[in-house]
Length: 362
Image 1 (tube, rainbow, N blue to C red):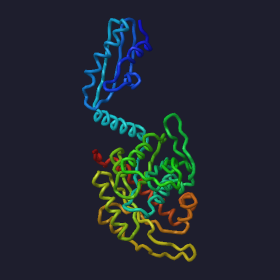
Image 2: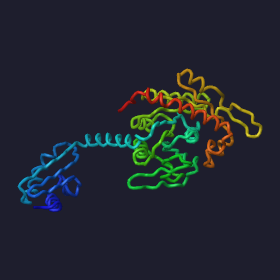
Image 3: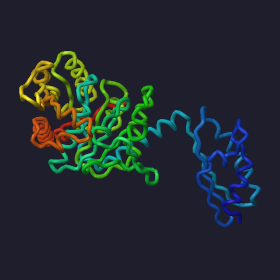
Image 4: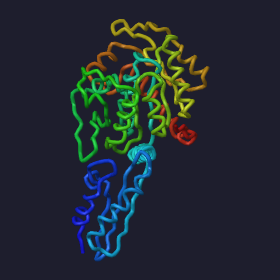
């Protein structure tokens, strides 16, 4: 009776059609069982045309007959390359869903354009939810400008890898992952859209996210590949839009809002960031970018207005020093605003989870 190694040795004589390498070296032999006077072999592969099985099967049987066994059971599973890719995509989606099935609420923080303080809002919102007793994780999906490591005082840190999973870093009990941990901070990320989508998928699929109440995703600005990747791969609880008061920022924010509505992601509300500048010496409030535009737009669009975040020197210092204002200045007007917004979101999410329709799939 031949053993497994003898069976594999016999199969090494079978070349894959059109190639000089054999089917064992190619890794196409997935299972071998040798039992008394019988042999079972399972072969899997993807081909361009889908007609390789007919060429391969008689050669495999001839090779196995040299072993002198009476019963040969052969299973050859052939798929076209297109079908194999489609199956892989489905398996990856299922893997992401399995990894995040212990996350209660997944919230995307988005803006129509850059420079409106979206990452500042994401970080401080995560900190506010944590202060309210929630288990929180934050994914920095802003591939081109990953600022979350700096804002949380984690710049230069590297996550550990256990097995084939990356362990997220932690700051004050908040789980954090960013491309900024994997690339030097001064390196320009010059990627086309598909690479951006793949990077985000990997940070979802290959990171060992723990049990979380809230998973905050800091999106890059705009309505491109990153946003579409997330709306296709995840059942988002909702999106929070961030805008400054002036019309040019608000116009782009509303485009982002309508994108989420088109893909059936509930918009939990809009935040007016840099609502006013508060001088740290005189305490006077200045409406540098105007005021009240976001509140009016939210009312017109029929979505909640979550609040106004003032621009203060301490907010700037907090972001640059890696000490979020919510964690380090409890008496700050910005901290009070973020805490109020966090409470509103906590009140909203159970209802939104029940009401949210299934989002689109391409």
